[in-house]
Image 1: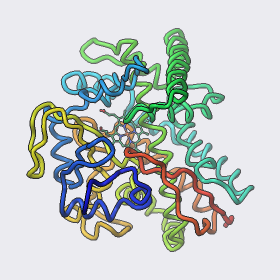
Image 2: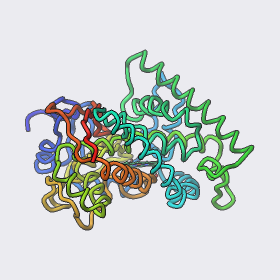
Image 3: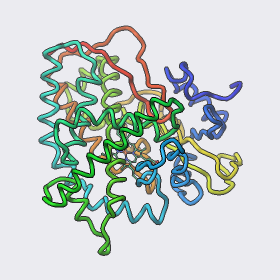
Image 4: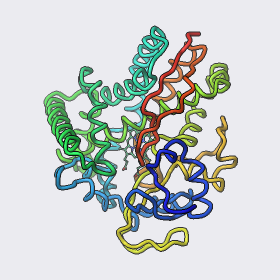
Length: 397
Ligand code: HEM
């Protein structure tokens, strides 16, 4: 490979996997563009970084998420960007409320929402799958979980898009900067009202449960609560939307898969796991070295920013046989698409539930789903593997 790989080059975005394979083989830890980030592509190296938060810090990234033009950014103070021991305390508090039971309670609401969205899709038959289902279902899930007014659900995407801009690399565009600032203020104002309302009148929702959560007599502070709510929106909305988009792309491109799943609904869960491995929406995550480190035989200076390419790790031949093929029903998959170690995704059960419910609402009702011959258009992002849009034609069963 000559020169540095550019993770934002159009040919890379179109299909990063051959480049990942070459990097795993020849330069498993190397500097890439933009910004001279240190890319980590092998499964074992990614896992060893995620297991060592002392040397490979998340908190060290917070500073770059609060550039001078932005100032206060609740995401930079959230769980995602904390190291031990702070992380452990915060995580155990929010885990008291964000439980598998709380998530399972969402199922009837999610099912009704998915069925309504599929009805609307079938009426029109030609739709952008992202707008028709992939986006509104996770927005409704987060909105319902937090007990937000339904009128606000469609606005969540705008807020979360603006958060995405600052979660990795900040923008130099003045107008975008103002939009981001406005979104943070709007969200904060709105969420504060919700918190106050739940304080006065607790309900059966996550915000109320978070207000009640205690570990050794301690509760979340107001700031911690706000930062966590921001993290839920940032971490929970876009990822699941893009998982549903990637699920639909595979179904549209491989009619034989759609046929098989329609015949064997028992395979839905393992289909979702394989999509998460093969084309995960969370392409990467970042860490900062706190001291000089060695990884994969390469010396990394202190304060190096690492981009851990989860989607490459998922296709590491050392980790999974026939890794470049989509194989339904693989056994013993490790959950690397949801991270590993102390930051392992808190929302994994919710993401899986949403994907299963979407398939259960969609597949029995359609005979086929197809798309035009044009290549899919992927978002220009290092962090997510996400379709810009997915125009499809659905034929009712
Ligand atoms: C953390 C992926 C959906 C909430 C993470 C991490 C990954 C990830 C890779 C670890 C980041 C790191 O180590 O730096 C995904 C994927 C999803 C998904 C692929 C969907 C397919 C969700 C949902 C929610 C959520 C639906 C909540 C509503 C979180 C939170 C964390 C997290 C709060 C931070 C945990 C911590 O720092 O301790 N997610 N996520 N995620 N995710 Fe998810």
